[in-house]
Image 1: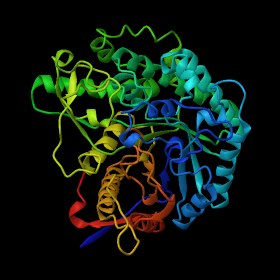
Image 2 (image 1 turned 90 degrees about the vertical axis):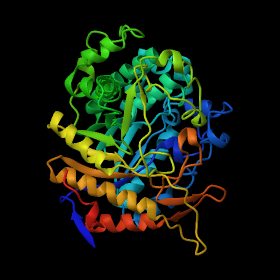
Image 3 (image 1 turned 45 degrees about the vertical axis):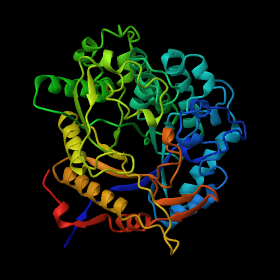
Length: 482
């Protein structure tokens, strides 16, 4: 028995991608290396030694991919621009050949009645800026504001929705805290400094965009917030969960939406950071108003106290790749006061526990604490080891079940009052999955990496029906009250 859950009129449906994960053409038409090109060149950093040099070759197959989106009747598409493709040195002269690619992308979307949502930064910092300090340098903040100005002037007449940063938690705490993402630095104090400079870059970019784009354009940031719970009822584990909430969530939410950092977070991290990177005027610049908060959700988190983590786990993740992630218990990225605890299955191919109700809890929690802020799910999806069947089709019932359950959870949150206005499925097509290389497939379109052909999976056809009806049919037993 199934139940049909209808979404509000005007609800936005889409898919999402990121430049480095799909574009390829890494050294063409003036593009220079990003930190991910450099990170991929280090043996052991990426599963299989893969790189994004070719990826899905989206740069050369733009029209084919746009036609595919139209065939799937997608109303909206979230993409990111490549900073080193637009401003190869990170600052200074604009590469018009690179900018022209996004000009054609936006025009192609609009011709097919697909609404673009443009993300300015999805982790591909120009290597030249990393050489000058990267997100540990305040100068990178000003360079990012320059990028926002260039992109806003070039595309703001047609793009009506902008996201400044994608998942700054990953940029700061995986890139500078554990080192399992580019640029591969492992230092908790550096992670906090990077987080602050990313927050400041967000605020500067919003201000720069508002100065050059029409007033109708909406501004947002996308956060991968931790839906965190303590591993036990002990006071120590409860304190660890509160701390992770601060360092994963409130380090972004509070300065952006409330103009402050949590006092508790500052005090609990004094042993590795004096927070001198926060200067007068920074919090006012960070907290400029935005219109929407983007939320990415895949799986919840459980943590336990790790009071002796410094002795037990020192250096575990320095420049490590995915093979290191489960080698020993690890501190939460950016802190030595907590470590993650395994959750019960079932799991996706990433080893992430499937818990749709965690999405409902997260959205309702955000609604309670920040009721004035509309929300959009900017990423949600699942990796499974998809292969074409004997009939040439790609049957992915596990992904359909995952998506259906999470859309039911999203519907429950909306029914309970959460102001959620859209959903962008991750991801349009299989692609370069960062440190996992090409070993994990999130797409609703199968990509044969040898031939670079695209094959819509069953989930793509299922999602097209969701979009067409503005509703999801789910098993009655998956529908629960929030």
